[in-house]
Amino acid sequence: MIKNNFSHTTTSIWSAISFQADKNGSILQTKQHSYSLPVIDEEETKQNISALIKELRRAHTVNEILTLLMECLDEFKFQYMLSHNGYRLAKNISKDKRVAVADIYAFSQAITYCFLFLPPERPAKPLIIVSGVMAPAGQDLGSSFLEQLWQTQGYNVFKLGAKIKPHSWLDAIDKHQPDFLSISCMLNTCIVNLRELLGFISARKETTQVCVGSVAINKLIAIQLSQDYHIPLFYGADFVDIQKKSTPSYENPARGEDTISLPDEITKLSSGETNCYWLQLSEVITDETKRYGWGEFLSYFNYAVIITTASQPVTSHDRKMLIRQLLKIEKFIEKFALLAFSFHYPIPCPFCLPADCREKEGKCMNPAYTRPFPKDFNINLSITMENAKITDLGLSTLILVK
Image 1 (cartoon, rainbow, N blue to C red):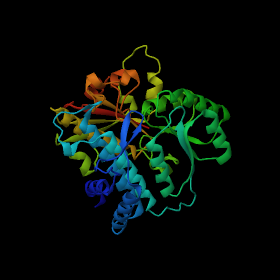
Image 2: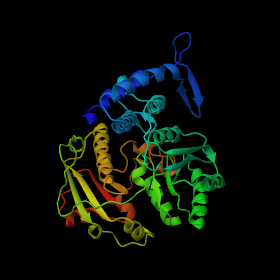
Image 3: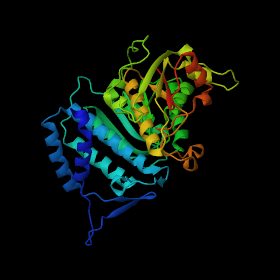
Image 4: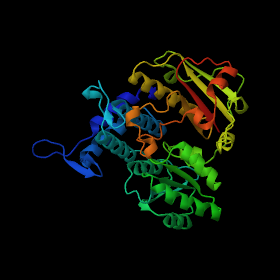
């Protein structure tokens, strides 16, 4: 089964990377922003990747390989999270388990090379995508990664590059008539330009759909922007299956059962048990306060799901692994719907120590993984669970589903 193959493939991709070295055998480095990144030997690495893809194609379809590659990248990024507490290297992490920024860069580049050796699909009606990085940000490896992936899926991708200002995005809409804009916001300062662009799109009543993502954007921001400008907005932290997102029709899962069947890889938690409860939105209890906007936010969704685990994790590593499983459940549920938005209770973020948290400074390292507390939106989770006869056995998650 391909699901059981990603660990081996991750190791194979990493082994395929060849670095340029000086006469002393030290890996050459290039300075980008505040990081020193290794210089990859592109020719040799591509040769190694080509051989790997040929091996995978003997046993798997192109779609299976694409899924496998994304699972490998996701797992590698998670290993980085396990290696760090915010900006600090976590304690008691062996050298063979440490993943640094330079490693993430090299691994992402290697996966991008993988797409070069996969035959592009030929969909009946290829989507037209305009992709770029919102000004003033000047670099985003993730944007290039997605562009190459979409080309492999047979879509027509027009790359605008980096530091793209609002009027240039509008010019691209007029020129290419795209189905989607894919906008990467690497810096918090990009949000001002993003808001300006969304205002233009709303005023012009454009039919082009907008996907936003990267470091400065999370799901909550995407929802708020969608409400502010009255246009559909897709959140793109892991915006891979763009064809599915372009047709947001779905059926709600069957209700009336206390639990649902989840894949084995999700239910095998360190606590040994995960329970999933489906609730009507009216069953989510809110506190009466004067905080503006909570009712509008809640009404954006259709129903709710509560996930409970058997016990509270003891160590920081166990906590990260447990919340990792909750994130997987969120992704699983999202397959049935357009959006799943989570509240982790009682922990909002699995990766940073409180002393390292920079969320209030607008410099969160992992906004895609950070979740607010239910109480921040006046949701009384304790009473909600009590009324629904759900036992709080430790770490829980409330997921609102659209």
